[in-house]
Image (tube, rainbow over the protein chains, first blue to last red):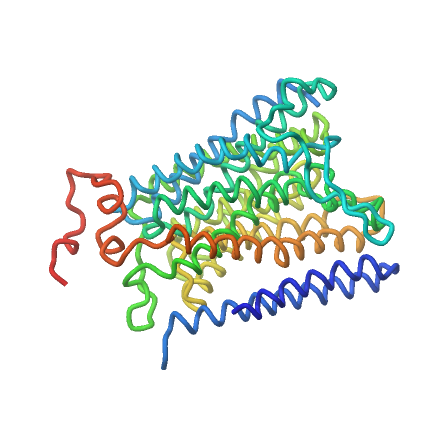
Length: 58
Length: 425
């Protein structure tokens, strides 16, 4: 589950890095959206892990 | 700033808290109704004290003192540095009554946001844990993000730092609602579902015990939300008098369209309108509309409300049936789902003289910060707190109801509504 949280934090660092390192609007938008997608991936991983815990073994 | 009007708006905010309290206790079981209302009062009380003592210092106000970080030649304002215990309030007269207005608003805003997780933890979250979580929320979580957005923090200063428009949240869709909704998600994950909710891996419906109170809560919430939207927009965005009137109109429009969209969606899906989901649609409309309340056109607000109301019904179902998240009041779908849509919609529809993609980009940066920084922070704090003050009531308490277990008396002592607590298991 902690991998999910690390992914969320990594996504935000990607967003922040794009703001510091890139100047063009298009480049920034691409990397910010990519960072957001990484965060969503982390959130989905946490949600799936929680669901599997609640459902128990098949 | 119009001080008299701002004061009236701030005084209206507790009606939003009353509305949310009625909604979450009405959507819970009757055996936890008194507990839910007492938890609301205790949470508001603790938030008021903790926010004045600690949170107000870290939230600060625009033009106040702040901690800054210097990174790559840029100055990042990341935390307020006003004196603790609000001791600067009476002595610092250089800003006039403005800091006192921000403090008063902050108390009510933090209190309102701290009620949102109570909704997702209804029927199983212990009172002591609710109080402790509210204290953490008012001391750390809310002031941090409120400073970033409302007190000239780095999200409000994207223009000088990165050459982008400032992240905008006029009525608190992000600062109050998404933040509170993320706390609700964290609480729901830590607590797990109520006993019997997912027996045999199938979701069992546990209907709310008083839908009339829920719907009455919606009306109260509208009045409170108008006050909240207007007060925040006056204090932090200096909106003009016509924009204040537009805020009032937009609040009503977004709530109305959110509710109607939920009524139609549930009618189409279940052949009859669902009252509790329609109430969720009403609040979802308010939440989504609050991001751009004083700046968006009524037409854009109608569209935003319609989408929020329709989406929230689908989200409630997805969380409950597919992700096994037991959220009795629908707080996560309403406050996170509709809040995120509202913040993004501001970027899509707000009038701008600059670049539209840049405005969208800043709103996405705000969303990314909420998901990537605030949610992990909230969840880590909650998990640590759970070790010190266990969140979940024991199995017997879950079955008996929180009223008997924690308060020693039920909300409705003259009625024996549920006999199952007296049946041997």
